Image (cartoon, rainbow, N blue to C red; front, side, top):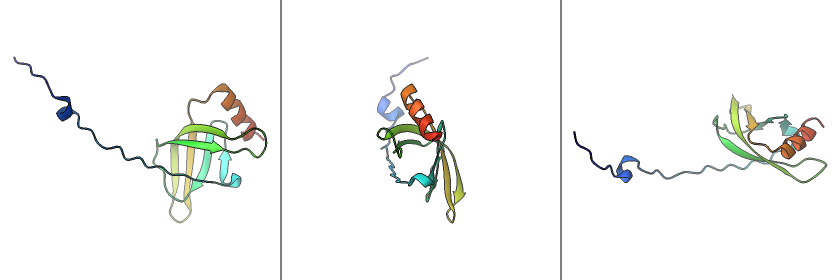
Length: 105
């Protein structure tokens, strides 16, 4: 039996990370706010499990609300658009309370 040291660079090659950043600006009537996330219509499909950061600008009250979430569903086609469902992750109690105010207003 023999042992040898494996060089990490050969065993685990690094791949360049390609960041695909998309910025969408949606009108309030294009977004359906839920207590745990949002649904919106997109012209391009978004892959499931994609992490997104969303900034919600309430029509009244305090300033914008920034939330991070994960895409759990994207259904549709090129002609009618894609309905994207995003569930928010790791919301603070304060952020969750503000989101509930917006959702039920």
